[in-house]
Image (tube, rainbow, N blue to C red; front, side):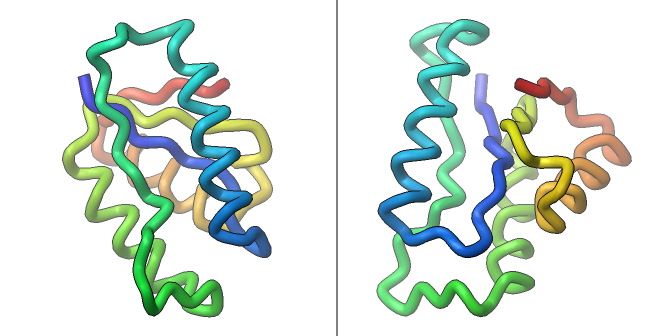
Length: 99
């Protein structure tokens, strides 16, 4: 099983995003086995620029193509990128779990 995580990222530092991602993965362990793979969309680019949201949204949607399920974490409803990821997942029939 491969899981794509969608959660609000705008305005957060790389370190904050890693902490939040790890917290969401811990929540997911209630639903998925230990053998689950999580797609990492907290990109560790040396040129990571938090001012390029469309570029990183594009990379996230590309990564979603490998997912068996998309998990939406708290706050996704009010985050532009998460809303677009939700639309993509639902439009293309990728199963969705909302935490």
